[in-house]
Image (tube, rainbow over all chains, first blue to last red):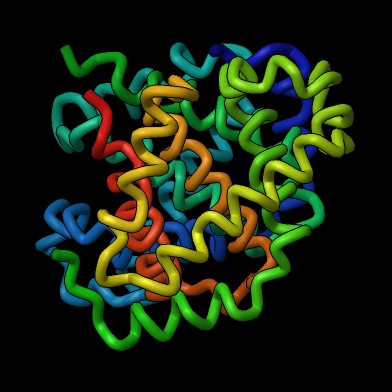
Length: 143
Length: 147
């Protein structure tokens, strides 16, 4: 289920359209995740404010989307390109990999709300495959 | 029994009262067949499903999408008894149609995305949570009679 050459082109073209809104996408996806999947809040007990759009949520949304942007740039070898992020998630953060699927789903929902005409089924499948590859890359070093 | 808050009941009633079934149903099913192509296994007699354009333009897919979406009406009308509402349909999907119940989850994810696309900003986190909870209960009920 790895992204094909066509998937990669689709992702790069779509990313070009949405990159300007990356921060908003990150904030919204993270906000939604914390509301719709409350168990994810367990990773952020050190934040003062977990409400949608709060300062820590905005800041972290930016961080996450920065990682996604980087992955798009390195789309031809996501695993190699994200080696240090992979080690971070595996050894330091130790986020249960099931949560990558959850955040990916929320990113897709946000893309649907913000780009209803551009987020066609073909774009959806390519982005979904890309996010799955990204999640796999982040889980590489777990065990 | 599932506990529903007033907000959840109102949200579900609202979404479905404004629902354009003949648009959302076909969009959700065709998106599912494109994004999760293995789901096409159940539609061998639907004709041309060779690519996204064919799927999205396929009249049998459109008709079936509308049918499936109307199938949710029963749950909307009887949110306190979704499990018993779908007992028969669950048996049908298991014994006759032989559908892997994981497909219900895949379709409900696509439905969430289509509804998100049509409601835009209105589909905020609280609305999404209510909608996904509702679909999760339906999905669970449809899988319940499998053995």
